[in-house]
Image (cartoon, rainbow, N blue to C red; front, side, top):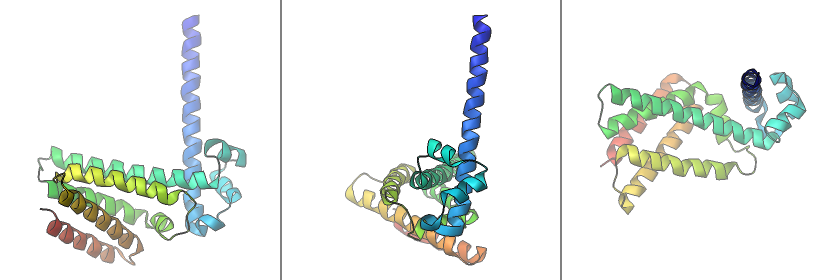
Length: 204
């Protein structure tokens, strides 16, 4: 009997977690659409919860408010970027690629592809209408990205090596912004190809 109760509790807990995750996902997706349409400042919580089919209380319960929801959306967006880049690099490695620059370019192209696919949301993050705390979060992500790129490229840990990776990372970030702002896929592809040329010139 105790075992049955435990199994029931586990099932109920799994259901509750799934329901919570689905609610959060719906709110994030709805927020993305509203922020794209109106920007952060003019976006209303009522519009977000209406689009999500949720409630104001649910939004505050899961995220705390509009600012926290925006920051959570940015974090979710970056996490998916990182997941896809890591998967692309791993796939190339498994196929036998070992050259650091080639692997970096594979990861960069995955990054650019996702940026182009979600260019409207990317524009929300780069056009300045963002809440307090966003730039801190962006800088923290940037430092972590520099660290990851340093490992991938295998650069030296001296001043020149660290600065080179920082410059390359900033260049890819700016190129990503240009991809999001491109008027056509061809224009975006031109940015991607130019970025690869510049990276090749900087990598020792």
